[in-house]
Amino acid sequence: MLWRPLFLAPGGDGWFAGELRVRILVLMRRMNFTDTQVATSGTARGINRGIVLNLIRRRQPISRADLARVSGLQRSTVSLITEQLIREKWVIYGPTGRLPRGRRPTFLQLNEKRAILVVDLRPSITTIAVSDVNGRFLSQQGIPTPADPQTAAAKFSEKIRQMIGSHPELVFEGIGISVPGRFDEHRQRVLFAPNLKWPEFDLRGPLEKATGLQVDMENAANACVLAEVWFGHAEKTRDMVVVTISEGVGVGMFTNGQLARGLNGMAGEFGHVPLDLEGPQCSCKGHGCWEVYASNWAALRYYQESGAASNGPSFQVLLSLAESGDQMALKALDRMAHGIGRGMRMVVAVIQAEVEAAVLVGKPPRVRPAAAEPSVARLRGAVALVLQKHFGPSAPVTRLRELAGARRAALRVQ
Image (cartoon, rainbow, N blue to C red; front, side, top):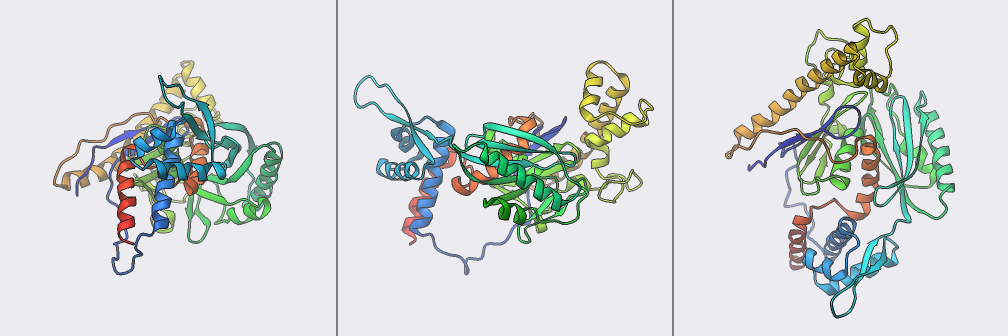
């Protein structure tokens, strides 16, 4: 197997967050060539639609001629698709271009009247926001997170209905929710959310019933992966691992352009891998998990253990204290940073072992800040969660011609 160069990058939310781009070996279903469906003309149309829609999203405003040139599709095909997208009100006409001679082109852009409601569910404060299709937030509000999922469903539904009522000019496509736990797609329930301290719960069903909108849920680390791919500078990346640090430690894996969820959605739970079986108790009831050494709450515990405060400050206050030169706060954050590095060595060691076992040895991972804005990464990931149902996976521009070739191959195998 050929491995690509890797790098690790902070992203997501909280003081530290990170992302490790990598082609990582995961358990994958073997392809059964005796139980597969041949490509159809509908498959080709879907591929073409995704190509055009994603190109408009990334390069807007853009002309039909440029769409045909970049995508490799015929101009007639591009015209048919864009006319359909205009009828569906996903795309609108933008400004008119200027040329030295000839017909002036009319540019196309996404319709910002199409909107998405998003929820960033966290243990203390939950943020609910309205976003347009470009990931720009039109309004957002934080509310205290209820103590149980039933109350949360009622309060979130009420707030969402209020937000819909306050934006009568918008057409809402759905609701995306980032959750601090693992969501099982098959059972449609959140199965593992130790920092939330809720039992196994179904938030999707009650919200859909109350709002009439389709609800999509995703783990917070996976949401940060989507934010980086859709709204950061990772559109050319097919494989990465994202590490987010906030109340806990989350890891999301992106392989071959798709999220890797694993059995029961539990892929990527590195935060609850024990580093020291004799260490402090974790919210998952285990001991010495990576999370108890590297999370925001770990930094607050370090600060309290230093004797600086009996009831430690919030994490934001701790950051402010450190910026003002408070030595105990600086030491607490330093211990947190070492805890992050300790766990990152564990993640990187797994990847490097696979790299070294390959025929061609790749470069070691490198760390860099994520491009997606950390404070709204989860919210933007929830936007992408809804958009990808209409746009398809956020295929890199460099692969669009390859997809166009797949379209032509699909027609040949009908």
